Image (cartoon, rainbow, N blue to C red):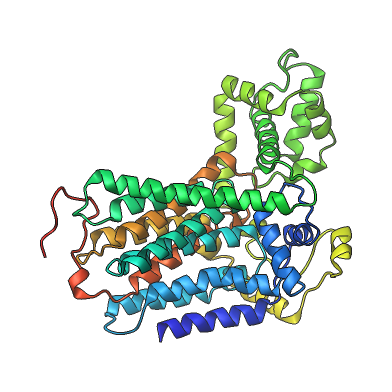
Length: 459
């Protein structure tokens, strides 16, 4: 029953969103995939996937089925059959179904975004690890699931620059989730071998996309760091850091820059600085942006910390979630990109209805990433304190930890408060609820300890 209801929510999401909700990022990546020309500002892997599915069936409908399957199918597998579910299992399953019906999940799983693909790949990686542990008595099947997990983890790392945390925590869980009869050395060696395989998938994906590109792909990391460092420099100047090394802060030029930056600076997103006439001129005359950023951070650490804290606050607890793009519906993008793709701006009746449904939740914690971080911590606490521990608990804890660590990394690299950037948090919470809904055989209740003992655990 539970798996059927999860399947039903998937079908409803597809019916409401297909062929996919497209924002500016979406249409740009679709054009990159179709043309084979990658600008480097977006992960080329997702653009390449869009291109592959677009070649089979023009548009994004087939990609949408693929990407959403990476979310709903793992949930169905984690939840298992309805046999012998306890009231606690059914409670977890009911909470999961409730979340799947909220606009955050229902709509986001229909948007063509790299954040959604990354979160879904991450869930698939950990779900594969959980299923491998549940089936460790079937060795070949279990090894196949471990290999599948490495593929998902490697692709996740290719989709987001800070997605390496997924593979890291997955490898840690593999080291600790091995049989307690196995000594520490072999467990670590096995985890390192798995991590090496995931790294190979990451490299293979990168090489494959570059080999099929029409022209060399730009450096996404270099571009992203330049954008980040510019934002940080402006934030430090607004908070008292001198704009020039050799010019006094009291000079007319320095005061003009400070006043101009303060007028347009907004810790909730970097976009507002693009309207500032002084912005490009300042950085054009400042030399290396990275070198300038490092100098300013060393000399003005408090200004940098204040700026970073303000940015992160908007990401986890925004004063007004409406300013942080809580949902996206319809099709939009640059005129030239839409024309090249042969599509047009569109807002269908069901899109308008979905948005009206979303507005009912804007004043609730649903779209507050900080609330999802607390939910992840709560779920981890439930797993740690419950009496009947399972051998898969360490994997689920690692999944929740990866989501929290990934979110925390934005304290250093965040440039906008869009809710989607931390979409991994609600996705791992859904995964944990699906695992808690699984009815474990009674003989597995003491199959592992979260801290591997030196001797085997008696039954």
